Length: 358
Image (cartoon, rainbow, N blue to C red; front, side, top):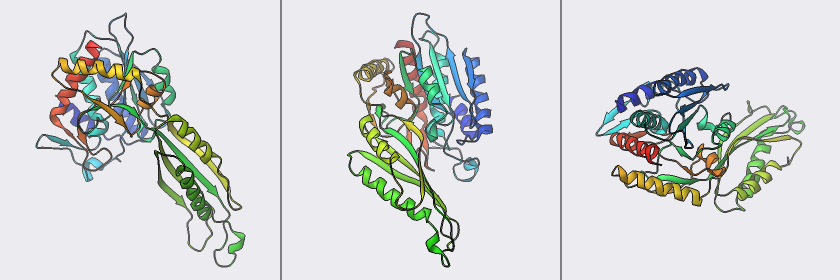
């Protein structure tokens, strides 16, 4: 039944930004959660609705918060064209199977199995793959008063949970220059592309001053014709930071960039997840999860992670947090995305032990 449900979920393709597809999938989840006894709320957003589901539990205990998302990086048609669902030698392949519809199936199956438990709150976000820009306030508000937070993102390759995450910020640099004929009147133009190149070099110089900062220029757009001095250009940059002080210093410097020619420059933060650093509270939570794992015959470990997720927010806020409760696999955001079939039931047993014993 677990694999059949996963196949159903993977078959409903849900690319980030496709509100119709995401909302149709949210309908499925809302119906499923309600059938399991939850009170479900939809939180509208232009690019797809988020869900909050509250499952009842022991009246005298604070809830456990589970963070998930139903968007994927894959476009509609990926399932038919390049990544068909298939099972081979105990491995399941398909778009979103690992990141993170496998985690969604694990959680709902565990909730179905355990009745005597803490209250459980589930947040399913529609735009996690682009930094959850429309869900940050929701996650922050709904994490108030919870006992602990757990993410259903993929684990480390060996199955270990994630005990901290680097901060992640997306920044867009937009340049407005002045168009002109590139041969007849080049001096009256201002190349937005040349300006953007100089600004990206300046960004590299800023980053070089700090240890353990990752900087990736993910997209560049601009111009139109080789005989026209380009009047506009932009770049989206992904930054990763190991600690908040470095993050603040780098973003401040990038935000203060100045044009080097007669161009207009705008720097905008598109999304931000602050660094979730190691803490004693998370260590204590991991110890309890280790005991829960042993109760079902599993040895659970934990380690830091460089990737970002919504658990960055709860960890940054000081909520005891762990991530990586999804099934074991590999290939997130890659065409060989996959999960080990047997790990689905193992993760269900672990999550069930967590919600019944912690």
